Length: 323
Ligand code: AFP
Image 1 (cartoon, protein in one colour):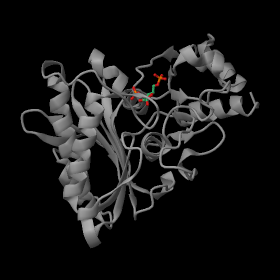
Image 2 (cartoon, rainbow, N blue to C red):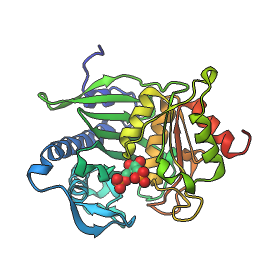
Image 3 (tube, rainbow, N blue to C red):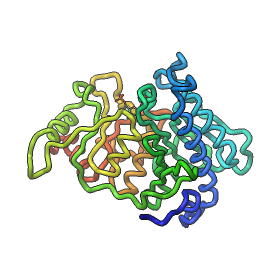
C-alpha cells in the first residue's frame, strides 16, 4: 500500500521548478476529468450519446460528448489564468485564451474524449493532455513539461509525468480526490501482448506485416506466440501496455489512405511517448523517435509503435529490414 497522497500534493512536492503553477493546471485538468467521468456514467440516461451530425477537423463523426467535454476542458483551462493557447482534436484552429493576460505561460494540447467510437457501447475512453511552454502551437514532444491521461474505466485513473517518472492516481468515488495508487510505474523490458488493428493488415508496409507474423508464430524460447489485445481506444490500449508490457502499433497505411497513420502527434503520440520513455519504454514511428519530431501543423498525424523497449526495438529491426 502506498502512502496516501493526493494528486495536488504529489505535484507540489515534485521539486519541479514550476511545481506551484503546474499543480494549478493539473488540478484543473483533474477537475475537468471528474466532471467528464460523472457525465459518462449517466450519458445514456440524459441523451448525451450519439453524434451531432457534424465531422471534426480529422473528417471523423463528432459525438455529442466530444463537443461537451471539449468545452469542459476549455473552461477549466481558462480558469487557471496560466494557459495562453489550446490545441484540441475538436477545434479546427488553436484557441487563444484572451482572459489569461500577462500570466499565460503554457500551451495545452488535448483530446477531450479519445476513443469516442467506444462511447455508444459503454467502452473505455480517455482524456489525453500535454503542456508545453509559451504560445507556439506546434512544438516537439521534447518541449513537454507535463503529459498524461485520464482513463474512464471501472475506476477513473489519472496517469501523469512531469519528467520525474510516471505515477497513477485513482479517483476515490466517495472522497472525490485523485489519490496516488501507482507509484513510479516501470514498463517491463519485454511483454507477451501485441495490440494493433489487424483489420488494416493488408495496408501495412512489408516490415510491419512480417513483424506481426513473427509475433504470432510459436516459439517457446522467445515467448511466442504473443497474445492479441485491441480496444480501439488509445488510452486503454496504452495503459495496459504500460503496466503489462508488450507493444502497441498504429502503423502507416502504406497503400494510400493514411500514409502517416491515424494518431495525432501533439495530443496522442507525443504525450504517450514521453510517458513510456519516463517508464523505461520506447516510442517510434518505426524509423524515428516520436519525441523529437517537429510537427508541421497542430493536427499532424504520425505512425506510432510504442511499448516495452525490447519489443519496440525488434519492430524497428523488421521495418529496417535487419530481421
Ligand atoms: P476515435 O476517437 O475516433 O474512436 O479514435 C480513437 C483513436 O484515435 C485512438 O484512441 C485509437 O487507438 C485509434 O483511434 C483506433 O483506430 P481504429 O478504429 O482505426 O483502430
